[in-house]
Amino acid sequence: MKKDTKRAFRVGTMVFTALAIFAVVIYLIGSKDNLFHSKTRITTSFNDIRGVIAGNNVRYSGINVGKVNSIEITSDSTVVLVLDIVKEYARFIYQDALVEINQHGLMGSKLLNITSGTAASGQIQDGTHLKGKEGIDIEGMLGKTQDILSQTSDAVESLKSIAQKIDLGQGDLGKLINEDMLYTNLLQTTQNLNNTLAGVDNITRKISSGEGDLARLLNKNELTTQTYSVLGNINQAADKAQQVVTNLETTTSSINSGEGTINMLLNNQKTAQNIDTTILKLQNTLTEFDKTAKAIQDSWIVRLFSKKKKKNKEKEDSSNQITEE
Image 1 (cartoon, rainbow, N blue to C red):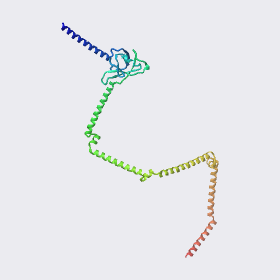
Image 2 (cartoon, helix red, strand yellow; image 1 turned 45 degrees about the vertical axis):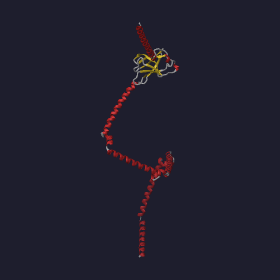
Image 3 (cartoon, one colour; image 1 turned 180 degrees about the vertical axis):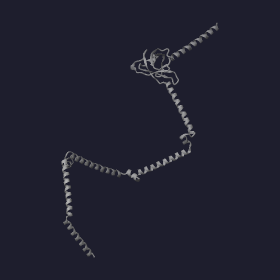
Image 4 (cartoon, one colour; image 1 turned 90 degrees about the vertical axis):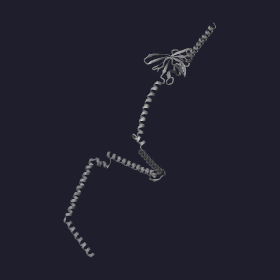
């Protein structure tokens, strides 16, 4: 009888312990999943839920405030998520809040994150629909990263090939690195360039110190003064030329307007005819005068007078010669 009692006690103890452990586990699980709290059911929608499943956590300000209850496809471009939010936290979430899809790290499960709204829009209630916001697409970023890594790998292979060619002395860069003559020529060129720069520096120093004609030309004001003087003379000449042009314009205007003797000579046909007639008469007079002069020269009186004059001159010349002897 005692053995049966002990056995029953042991069995009862084990059952009680098992039930207690089960109750604790249920409590812990319920506390974690908010099974023993009243909830507010709301909805949100996305074009792409990126792998969100029922049971994923819903967070607000980094705190788990609910779970994804179910997923519904309402059209070919819209997926509705039904969310259960613990009422204890629902009073802090407002109707203009946004819901975005995030992820636990790079390889973790999906979660929904509710951003804060404004109190003016009011607290969420059963049936409230919150707008969905496209969050960071980790999978898309990983895909782009994979492409970048692939391109980087190709670039590394290209650099490796270039390095091998350089080591073998192929190409200009390989020859430059591996051949001493090219290095020597480059060194000589650098030295010549340094010498040239030193010469330029010396010339600059002399110019700065006022040595040489170029320095005097740059540093003294005589050339500037002379230049200003020449420019002044040019300006005066330009003014005089302008005055002459003005006078010519005035004269031309007077001629064109019919004023003055020149206009009469140029534009009056009668005056021009009179001048032509006068010139013709003058030419005729000169012609008659020339004929008269020739007739006088050919007359016997003039010839006789010329002979006497010639004889007298010969006598004078003979007398002068005798006197000199």
